[in-house]
Length: 193
Image (cartoon, rainbow, N blue to C red):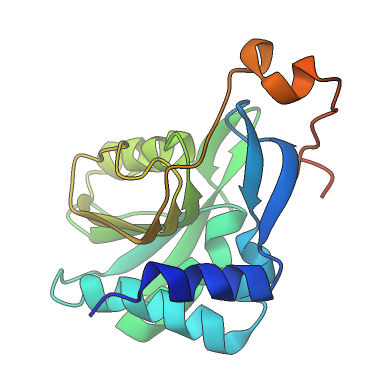
């Protein structure tokens, strides 16, 4: 049984993982809300709860490796992998592109589950999907905690999110917060928050 949306949002608010303000997202879009999953995942009980939802959804997918885009997906991906008894690896950006480093590799035919913390446009996940395909591995699915697109982003495999929300986003040139003179901050792994 999936966790109720209100319960998940209460957990995000309690841990200050759901922020209100003016944010520039990794995608470049602006939004009045930001999910800083690292704030909720610092608590083992919530990490276990959310990772458990993903692991439970893919328990029959015969996952052999969990792969996550750095940096947001690493913590939840590692916990999902632990719960599923699967090897866990992650990708990193080098010169703007996701790639496997640190000796990590995918093997031909290996069943890979991609795990991420938050999906807005799916950009990082789509890059990891390409790496899985290039290696000749099989994509078992994509799991993530927060789907900011409310189901609009579709992956070429089974996918699952713990929470779906339709969060308002704006192109920077159309952002009413910018037009009102409010400066956007860049939270997350590539910003200053």
